[in-house]
Image: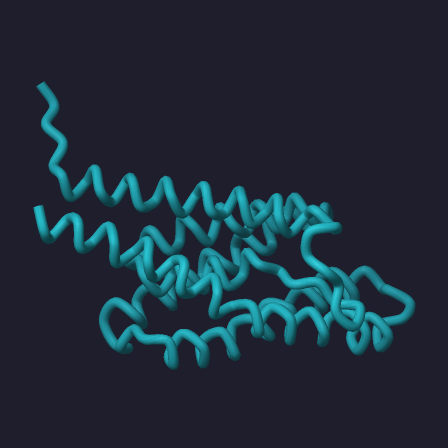
Length: 178
Protein backbone atom coordinates (compact mmCIF):
# COMPACT_ATOMS: atom_id res chain seq x y z
CA UNK A 1 0.00 0.00 0.00
CA UNK A 2 1.30 3.46 -0.92
CA UNK A 3 1.17 6.03 1.83
CA UNK A 4 1.31 9.68 0.80
CA UNK A 5 2.18 12.19 3.48
CA UNK A 6 0.11 15.28 4.14
CA UNK A 7 3.08 17.46 3.14
CA UNK A 8 3.18 15.90 -0.33
CA UNK A 9 -0.58 16.26 -0.73
CA UNK A 10 -0.46 19.94 0.26
CA UNK A 11 2.43 20.57 -2.16
CA UNK A 12 0.52 18.93 -4.99
CA UNK A 13 -2.61 20.91 -4.07
CA UNK A 14 -0.62 24.17 -4.13
CA UNK A 15 0.94 23.30 -7.50
CA UNK A 16 -2.49 22.41 -8.88
CA UNK A 17 -3.83 25.81 -7.75
CA UNK A 18 -0.84 27.46 -9.44
CA UNK A 19 -1.54 25.54 -12.64
CA UNK A 20 -5.22 26.57 -12.59
CA UNK A 21 -4.09 30.15 -12.05
CA UNK A 22 -1.74 29.91 -15.04
CA UNK A 23 -4.54 28.60 -17.28
CA UNK A 24 -6.91 31.31 -16.04
CA UNK A 25 -4.35 34.09 -16.54
CA UNK A 26 -3.47 32.78 -19.99
CA UNK A 27 -7.14 32.85 -20.99
CA UNK A 28 -7.49 36.32 -19.48
CA UNK A 29 -4.39 37.52 -21.30
CA UNK A 30 -5.55 36.15 -24.66
CA UNK A 31 -9.08 37.62 -24.42
CA UNK A 32 -8.64 41.09 -25.80
CA UNK A 33 -11.91 42.55 -24.50
CA UNK A 34 -11.36 41.89 -20.78
CA UNK A 35 -8.08 43.72 -20.22
CA UNK A 36 -7.93 47.19 -21.74
CA UNK A 37 -5.02 48.31 -23.85
CA UNK A 38 -3.13 51.25 -22.36
CA UNK A 39 -1.04 53.44 -24.70
CA UNK A 40 -0.85 50.58 -27.20
CA UNK A 41 0.41 48.01 -24.70
CA UNK A 42 -1.15 44.95 -23.16
CA UNK A 43 0.26 43.24 -20.07
CA UNK A 44 1.80 39.80 -20.02
CA UNK A 45 0.16 38.63 -16.81
CA UNK A 46 1.95 35.28 -16.93
CA UNK A 47 5.33 36.91 -16.27
CA UNK A 48 4.41 38.25 -12.78
CA UNK A 49 2.72 34.90 -12.10
CA UNK A 50 5.95 33.13 -13.02
CA UNK A 51 8.00 35.46 -10.80
CA UNK A 52 5.74 34.94 -7.80
CA UNK A 53 5.67 31.17 -8.22
CA UNK A 54 9.45 31.11 -8.63
CA UNK A 55 10.04 33.10 -5.44
CA UNK A 56 7.56 31.13 -3.34
CA UNK A 57 8.72 27.70 -4.47
CA UNK A 58 12.07 25.95 -4.43
CA UNK A 59 14.29 25.82 -7.51
CA UNK A 60 12.97 22.59 -9.06
CA UNK A 61 9.31 23.56 -8.90
CA UNK A 62 10.31 27.01 -10.21
CA UNK A 63 12.01 25.41 -13.21
CA UNK A 64 8.99 23.23 -13.97
CA UNK A 65 6.61 26.18 -13.79
CA UNK A 66 9.07 28.18 -15.91
CA UNK A 67 8.79 25.54 -18.62
CA UNK A 68 4.98 25.45 -18.34
CA UNK A 69 4.55 29.22 -18.50
CA UNK A 70 7.20 29.46 -21.22
CA UNK A 71 5.28 26.93 -23.31
CA UNK A 72 2.07 28.94 -22.84
CA UNK A 73 3.90 32.09 -23.97
CA UNK A 74 5.51 30.24 -26.90
CA UNK A 75 2.12 28.97 -28.07
CA UNK A 76 0.60 32.44 -27.83
CA UNK A 77 3.26 34.00 -30.08
CA UNK A 78 3.77 31.14 -32.51
CA UNK A 79 7.36 31.36 -33.71
CA UNK A 80 10.65 30.24 -32.14
CA UNK A 81 8.84 27.63 -30.06
CA UNK A 82 10.84 26.74 -26.96
CA UNK A 83 12.84 29.95 -26.58
CA UNK A 84 10.69 31.36 -23.79
CA UNK A 85 10.41 27.99 -22.07
CA UNK A 86 14.20 27.66 -21.95
CA UNK A 87 14.63 31.26 -20.78
CA UNK A 88 12.04 30.94 -18.00
CA UNK A 89 13.51 27.55 -17.04
CA UNK A 90 16.87 29.22 -16.36
CA UNK A 91 15.35 32.26 -14.65
CA UNK A 92 13.17 29.95 -12.53
CA UNK A 93 16.22 28.11 -11.26
CA UNK A 94 18.04 31.35 -10.46
CA UNK A 95 15.05 32.87 -8.65
CA UNK A 96 14.30 29.63 -6.81
CA UNK A 97 17.86 29.39 -5.48
CA UNK A 98 18.08 33.10 -4.64
CA UNK A 99 14.83 33.27 -2.71
CA UNK A 100 15.21 29.88 -1.05
CA UNK A 101 18.72 30.36 0.29
CA UNK A 102 19.87 33.98 0.04
CA UNK A 103 17.12 36.65 -0.20
CA UNK A 104 14.35 37.44 2.27
CA UNK A 105 10.94 37.11 0.70
CA UNK A 106 8.78 40.23 1.00
CA UNK A 107 6.94 42.64 -1.27
CA UNK A 108 9.90 44.98 -1.74
CA UNK A 109 12.23 42.21 -2.93
CA UNK A 110 9.47 40.90 -5.20
CA UNK A 111 8.92 44.34 -6.71
CA UNK A 112 12.64 44.91 -7.32
CA UNK A 113 12.87 41.45 -8.86
CA UNK A 114 9.92 42.32 -11.10
CA UNK A 115 11.62 45.55 -12.13
CA UNK A 116 14.54 43.44 -13.37
CA UNK A 117 12.86 40.31 -14.76
CA UNK A 118 9.93 41.93 -16.61
CA UNK A 119 12.07 44.28 -18.78
CA UNK A 120 14.57 41.45 -19.27
CA UNK A 121 11.79 39.18 -20.50
CA UNK A 122 10.42 41.81 -22.84
CA UNK A 123 13.97 42.55 -24.00
CA UNK A 124 14.64 38.99 -25.16
CA UNK A 125 11.16 38.87 -26.69
CA UNK A 126 12.04 42.06 -28.57
CA UNK A 127 15.29 40.51 -29.73
CA UNK A 128 13.85 37.18 -30.86
CA UNK A 129 10.50 38.36 -32.22
CA UNK A 130 11.31 41.77 -33.70
CA UNK A 131 15.01 42.25 -34.38
CA UNK A 132 16.12 38.78 -35.52
CA UNK A 133 13.15 38.20 -37.89
CA UNK A 134 13.79 41.65 -39.41
CA UNK A 135 10.65 43.53 -38.34
CA UNK A 136 10.41 46.77 -40.33
CA UNK A 137 9.38 49.34 -37.72
CA UNK A 138 11.48 48.24 -34.75
CA UNK A 139 11.50 51.67 -33.09
CA UNK A 140 7.73 51.97 -33.41
CA UNK A 141 7.21 48.53 -31.90
CA UNK A 142 9.59 49.35 -29.06
CA UNK A 143 8.15 52.76 -28.16
CA UNK A 144 4.46 52.20 -28.80
CA UNK A 145 4.04 48.54 -27.93
CA UNK A 146 6.79 47.06 -25.78
CA UNK A 147 7.54 49.95 -23.40
CA UNK A 148 3.83 50.45 -22.52
CA UNK A 149 3.49 46.67 -22.10
CA UNK A 150 6.45 46.57 -19.71
CA UNK A 151 5.03 49.44 -17.64
CA UNK A 152 1.55 47.91 -17.62
CA UNK A 153 2.91 44.52 -16.55
CA UNK A 154 4.97 46.06 -13.73
CA UNK A 155 1.94 48.01 -12.48
CA UNK A 156 -0.32 44.94 -12.28
CA UNK A 157 2.34 42.61 -10.84
CA UNK A 158 1.52 43.41 -7.15
CA UNK A 159 -1.99 42.01 -7.62
CA UNK A 160 -0.58 38.69 -8.81
CA UNK A 161 1.97 38.72 -5.97
CA UNK A 162 -0.66 39.10 -3.25
CA UNK A 163 -2.88 36.37 -4.73
CA UNK A 164 0.02 33.91 -4.89
CA UNK A 165 1.27 34.93 -1.46
CA UNK A 166 -2.13 34.08 -0.05
CA UNK A 167 -2.10 30.67 -1.78
CA UNK A 168 1.46 29.85 -0.67
CA UNK A 169 1.00 30.94 2.94
CA UNK A 170 -2.46 29.42 3.31
CA UNK A 171 -1.21 26.00 2.23
CA UNK A 172 1.92 26.25 4.40
CA UNK A 173 -0.16 27.36 7.40
CA UNK A 174 -2.58 24.48 6.90
CA UNK A 175 0.36 22.11 6.58
CA UNK A 176 1.99 23.39 9.80
CA UNK A 177 -1.23 23.66 11.76
CA UNK A 178 -2.47 20.14 11.25
